[in-house]
Image 1 (tube, rainbow over the protein chains, first blue to last red):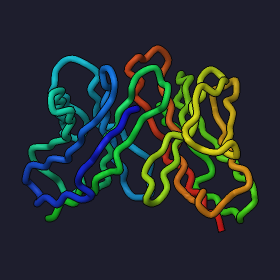
Image 2: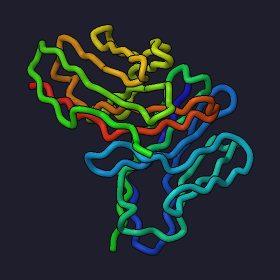
Image 3: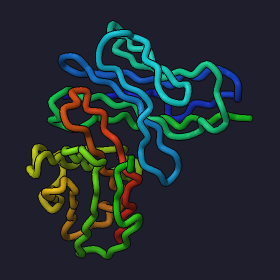
Image 4: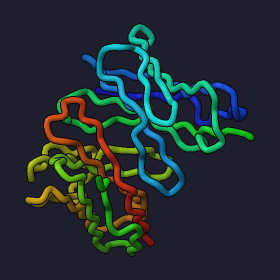
Length: 114
Length: 114
């Protein structure tokens, strides 16, 4: 079975500071890892994914994520936070083959303070 | 390119009634996934349809069912509604021949059961 953990319910960052949203995963075999963002009363927007290759993945809106196989982590990062980045962020893992859909973490509320 | 669309935006039903939710995937996408996002439970995989067939389902009772039409749009039916079925129901689609299977989500249908 696959699982995802997002250890922080909420992360507070001052505007202009770097941000990190943490994610660890468990999956048998090679993981496909995703980050999505959800704004209030909206669906999920795809940010980035790791399939294979370079451990640093760059995505939309200046976000990037670092895949660390030994620590089974896939933390989301951004060098300089914007107030508009405030939203709910989900990490997800997919075990391949489309069998069970995506398994999501519980989400992390990111709050950027002006 | 139009994204995934879902209808209705909001749906209010009473206990015991049936609800029908609809999803139109991105043009060219053949796989449709359904997820439930209930308060306190996070995002949970419900159903997966591909090429008109149900390929897999999550840990939900049989009163959650659906189908996929020849044009790849999909319908989710929830029978004998219970209060705990109140949630945001999200639909996602994936492109043909994309082994990385990024799922693109619609805005969701908010189902309220009274």
